[in-house]
Amino acid sequence: MFSSAPEETELIEKHEEILGQRAELMEQMESLREQLRVQRGKRGEECEAAHLRNSHLLQDLQQIEDRLRGAQLPRPNFLAMETRYWASVEESLPAWEHFLLGKGPHPAPGRGHLPRRAKQRASTVTDQGLPPCPKRRTAP
Image 1: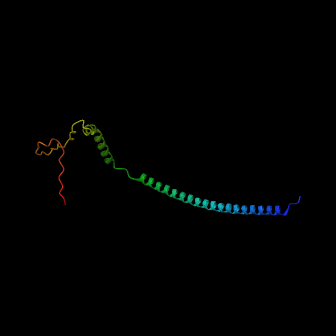
Image 2: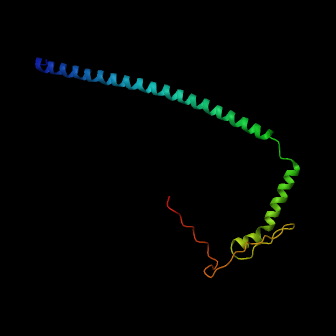
Image 3: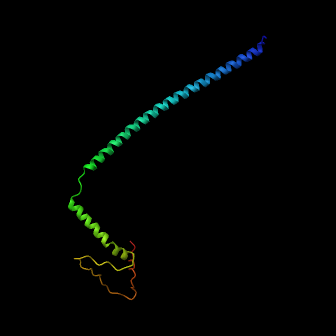
């Protein structure tokens, strides 16, 4: 029932080793807890800053909306003129569309406009509707 001295010293050494490992683990756990506490504090500060930034942005947006609501509308005669302009654009669109797609003649100018005359130049035998040749550059 009595244990021998070598076995007892061996058990004491193992016990001290286990206590040392336990102390190391406790220190590690304590340092990790401290790190987590610091991280939580930083996250809290960042969250607070984000809340503040978001509230400022919302206030700025509200001010912009208020300014836009209070802005004066264009004058009625200007609105009428703009409406007539877009109506005339929509009315003349099909004629221009055919011309721009190469499917029809140039649309006739509106009332009150005189047709423009094309500049006449002396035609040559080599000129058959081709673009002009580029000018030669002189060396500087």
